[in-house]
Length: 131
Picture 1 (cartoon, helix red, strand yellow):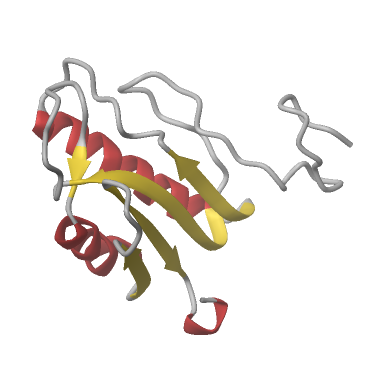
Picture 2 (cartoon, rainbow, N blue to C red):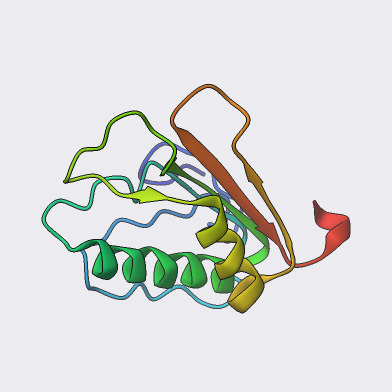
């Protein structure tokens, strides 16, 4: 069957997970209800939020994503290693994501900063054999 975005879903509707919410609200995702939870470009625009409050929002959202995933998560963010910054955008560092993973997610993670865009990809898994 097809979900709202035209993505094919399994019989329990768990193939596609989307975070579509306003800043400051809490998603009600059942724990371990998806195999993977993926966010692409979701956290790049912070608008007028302070750097600190948006970082807290991102960290809390990533923790919620991981709690909802049975296997793991993946997301991309703009990197702090850029040649120009815009005030309304959020830039994350590899250190920040590594610290978040080790503090509250899993030690099984990777930060890919190898491609030529001014962004990075972060992925974390529950078990090393799932990487």
